[in-house]
Image 1 (cartoon, rainbow, N blue to C red):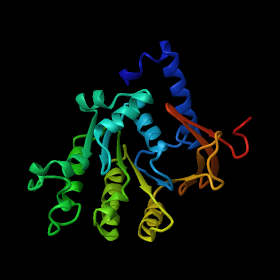
Image 2 (image 1 turned 45 degrees about the horizontal axis):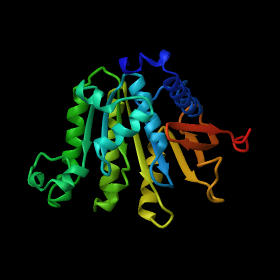
Image 3 (image 1 turned 120 degrees about the horizontal axis):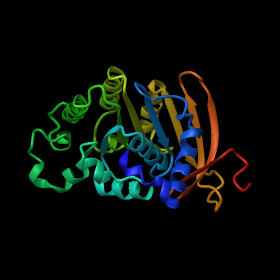
Image 4 (image 1 turned 180 degrees about the horizontal axis):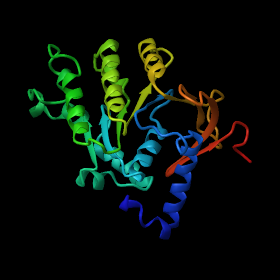
Length: 266
């Protein structure tokens, strides 16, 4: 939280907080606590700015963060985070956050034979798929007993591209879902990128969405590009208040603005 203490004297920082608050209020996360619950972002375009908004919220709230990424380096998340007003490297140095990344594993051949590598399934198909990764996550979370934490898994669909079968991804999700349910102060945030031609990913995302408490579906504009809008967003709560809401949004370098359909230019 101390990374945000200077907000009152930093006009740019204040504007970032207001922009982030708009997203959180639109998702109703200012009224509904996600502790013990799961959230999935289904993105129909490249990268989700909303995942970074939720990471920002977790950092602002002083929650512990376990960030799992298959496609990006820790530097990527740090650079995006600094534009949104928080510092991942500071959180890592203070043991407020843990980063589990597979990108460096693919580059570093000296680690390929390490049986404790969370991404050992990439190189040894005889191992139980994703088990070591799950155990690594469990080890991190077990150190946060009675502390609020966010388990964030970015672009889970990458596992399909890496040869993991959908049934194993579903089991992986179920274990992660169980982790946050067992610890009532934990929350699970997952993003999945889908394309109309990839039926496996679509089916997998639909199944996971059925089990999640909140489903955020992010799409580009059907009419093409617009200077006023980036895309559309559908927000579905599978628990009380069981609502479905629709928004348009505009991405900026330092945040997102959201609008009711038809009000972007007002």
